[in-house]
Amino acid sequence: MAARRTTRANNHARGQRVTRGALDRHKRQISGRLEQLRGDRSQRSFARDLGVFQQNVNRYESGTTPHADFLITLALQENVSLDWLLLGKGRPRRR
Image (tube, rainbow, N blue to C red):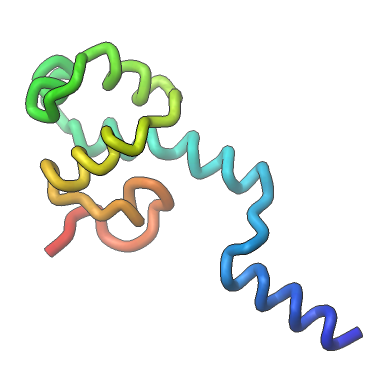
């Protein structure tokens, strides 16, 4: 019995088992972090800085999960940690 608990704990620690609820919660929080990064800039200005359409920024801030290309561009252009952007872990800005 103890071996089973240890195996489950190890699997969870390695991230092999993520509940649907946890996944959905993280996805919902991305929009707030995007808004935080945008700050006082308009969606149009923010989109222009990233080279995307304003409608995309609007959709992503409204809860649609951003595409990987957008996330990578955002991380590079804004010097943002993907761990923070996607999971809320660590610092927003890379050093």
